[in-house]
Length: 376
Image 1 (cartoon, rainbow, N blue to C red):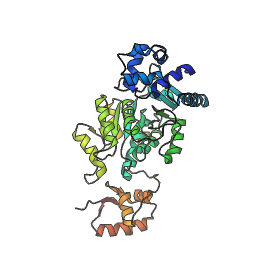
Image 2 (image 1 turned 45 degrees about the vertical axis):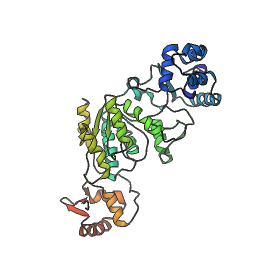
Image 3 (image 1 turned 120 degrees about the vertical axis):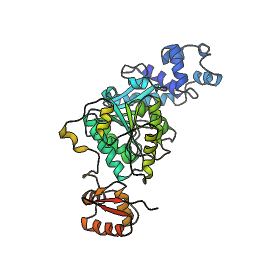
Image 4 (image 1 turned 120 degrees about the horizontal axis):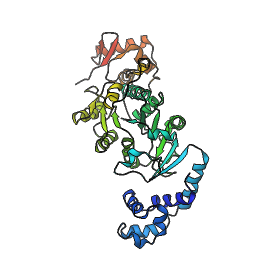
């Protein structure tokens, strides 16, 4: 357990205006500890600081006492609340090899997951139904093979990836863009509680930090930095998921992408990554083979990517025909799977699908499968 005096020094260093991570790490390299930074005269750090930074370092931030008290109480509240500082033996080694490792990590849950082999799974906040199915199925398959699934707790693909990760022994790590005393988005509150109990919540942000827009792209470097590779399930050409993939490549990690329909906007980012050298994958075993990991036994292959029969009815809007098309996505789908997604009866679906066929918007395939047709 960190001592309160040491905690105060770390928090003061992080909260000092104008002193970013790079400058703080330079000071720590010279001084050896955050306490030593503040015990020495500012003149000693003349080479490491400019004048405004030196002036800021002299005066403790106004909210420091409150921040120290809040963080100290948070640590005492639960045995699964942890602070990992640079130099802590529990600090994840993979992050130490990146260009910008955080000075301090707040963690809640199973700390041992930071030492496990892991795979990041990321994608669109507005995925297709098929994308949600794929994210959950890939993550479950990889978790059952022993890989910890890392994602960002966002809506869409992230949430599905965490749910899949929780289905296997690999479990999941959620890297969030707020303080750990907050949950964002609010609709993932129950999921965050499950992750805190069965997996790990992780943040570089101080307690009380609200969901600020710049924090989310920044935390992406931690998602990729913690993992051996990054799987992009669905993404638009300009998206945070592609930022994560770029960071992964810069960090020397593997990048994987799931191809999709050429007509689906959410597949274009994945196709771009594949053209740029990302590895095309069609199943979880493709990733395991690339990472030279063993695949789950035959009894565990029921979670192969594909439409989930236990998927809850999708929350769809628009006209009835549009609801059917939204649920159908762009990949071939069985009538049963479409019924699971929409909550409609087989009779209702058959009537609507016939109308869509006559309109040239849906094709009926062998095996009672249906596929959406792009219109010029």
